[in-house]
Length: 70
View 1 (cartoon, rainbow, N blue to C red):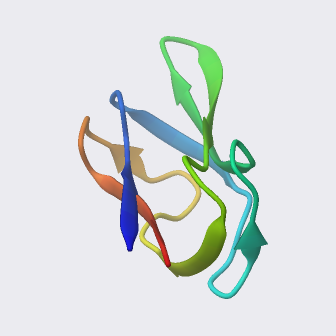
View 2: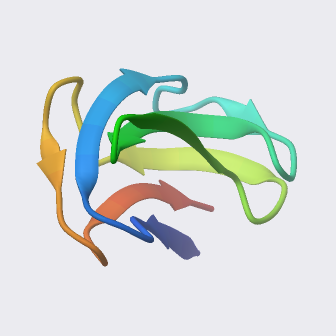
């Protein structure tokens, strides 16, 4: 299992997946706003979303978990 973590601090604008979704490599998992830019966070690999740790409008610090893939 892989845990996708925030690479920078920012606010979650959109969560693009839910638990149980099959995802492809580079598919958007969430969109984060940081420094007035919208930054998509893509899946590092193919897999199934096991758990989503974030919700819209939540503030993330660098390194916070976003999604667990299995």
